[in-house]
Each structure stands twice: as structure tokens, then as C-alpha cells.
Length: 259
Image (cartoon, rainbow, N blue to C red; front, side):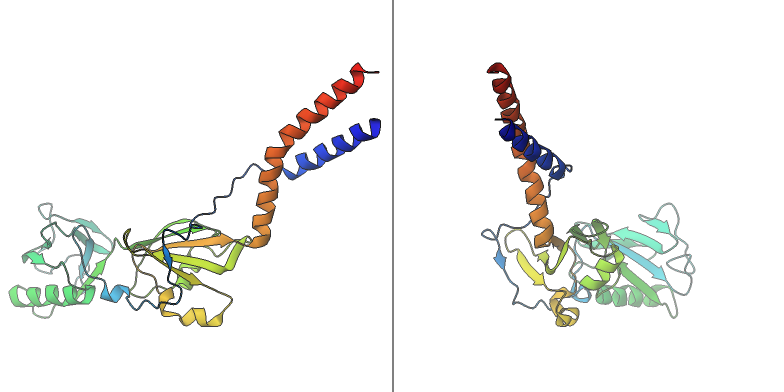
């Protein structure tokens, strides 16, 4: 009987050691029934082909004078926009127009960034400036990165072709627990979501067109199998340990009562 008690006590101590962490790992995006895996599909759409929508935020600069959008008419408090060292920002209204200094409302919805930039530049050339050089950016475009990455969160897309590798570098790199063979890019809308699986062990993934990020993408880096097994063991021991302690306590009481 004493040997049995000692054996159970040793097992209890071992489970206590393995359950030192109470972290509950959330394995996101594992359900594959509700969405279809489009690993074999290649997405050719890039931010250079993104079409401006209502509520987008446009940053407009006149490169001839970085302080103002137009040289002869500095932006004042009456203009609907906000200023920064990078230039003025303006929101696209629900009617598809954006209000810009001097030239007024310009319809930009449905245009790409380059098309809108050329349109604004032409309008300033016709109405006010001799040789304007207009730079236009869409500054609200972003992606979300989750999982085994050093810095989870939302990241703005600052150029037309930002790759998955560039984003991982910006986020500090993968953690030691990351499964570099199973990086998922979830894109599309709620009615037609797409899943693209990227294997970073494959050198071809660097030039994979589908690894060029789009606004609204969710990047999820799963755990590798070894780390997942460790987490499962901790979770199991967390559940089993109280029952084992209760059993050992009852066994000790029973033994003492029958001496």
C-alpha cells in the first residue's frame, strides 16, 4: 500500500511540473469546412490595381512644395483634411468624391492609385499650377498578422507590392514555435473567403505571386507539431492534475483510517 501511495505521489509531482504554464494556445483558422482551400490558385491582384472606395484615406502632396498641396494656396483650417509631415490626408466621401484645395470635389471612387494621382495632377495643372508633381497614396490599407510572430497586430501597406517576407521581417520574424511550412493568408470577403498556404521552406515561395499582400489580408502562422504536442500535454495535465491530487488525498485518508 505504501508503494502505491508513493507511486501516485511521484506521478502527481510530475504532472505538477509539466503544468507549470497555464497558457491556452488558440489554434485559429483550423476549420476547413466553412471555407475552401485555394492553395493552388494564384492571385494576380496587387495594390497597384486596388480601386479606391468610399471611406478610404488619401494622402496628397505637391512635391514642388512639400508644405502644401498647392504652392499658391496653402491649406488652411477651412479645408476638410488633416496635415502631417508626410502631407495632407483627405477622406473619400460616400458619394465617391474627395474634397481637395482649390479644385474642389474630385470623383475618385473606382480609380486606381495611379489613375487618381494623374487625375488630380491634371486638374491642378489646368486650374492653378504650371508643372505640378502630385504624389497620392492610399494610407488606410492594412493587413493583420496573428499567431507565432514576434509582433502580432495590424500593419499598413505602404507600397504597391508588399510581400509576405517583407511583412514578417517588419513584424520581427517568426517565433521558435512557428510552423514555417504552414503560413496561411486568408483573403476575400465573408461570402467568398480564400485560403492561400505558403511554405517558406520552399524557395519558390519567395517569388510566388500569391504572397504579394492585399489590403484586408489576415496572415496566420500556426504552431509547429512539436510545440503543439507540448501545449496539448500541458492542457491535459492541467485537467488531469486536480483529479489525481483528489485521488491521492482520498487514498492517503483511506490508508490512515485503516491502520
